[in-house]
Amino acid sequence: MRLLHTMLRVGNLQRSILFYTEIMGMTLLRQKDYPKGRFTLAFLGYGNEKQHTALELTYNWDTDHYDIGSGFGHLAIEVDDVYQAAEKIHTGGGKIIRQPGPMNAGTTLLAFVADPDGYEIELLQPKAQQPANLLGS
View 1 (cartoon, rainbow, N blue to C red):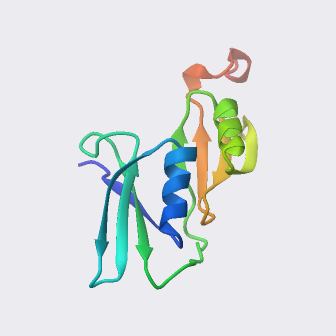
View 2 (view 1 turned 30 degrees about the vertical axis):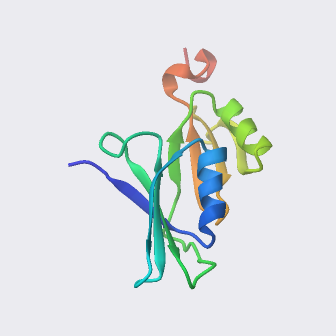
């Protein structure tokens, strides 16, 4: 078994595709309209779907806004350098909702950004690439 994709409903498909491709660095893998159902699906990711999990954006043609709700937490994306990634996202127009730094109850370096619909994305730096003083060495 493997995780295939995560789906998010979005209010403006083109705005979301631009965010995930131009700011988050994903590639649009495929997109298809379903006129009978009045929706469009777009799949994005960091590599081929046969080897990598994808992000599915669902755009219902008659809905331009969703309430995220209290059950959804966040997406998590590993980055080489959380500080550089957050700066690049901010410079590209992305919204930083938690500045880069160690987590409040540990040493993991992270930051949080929000996509155009308000979904949170956690940026995580691998432990092996964190400064030794944060790892307790």
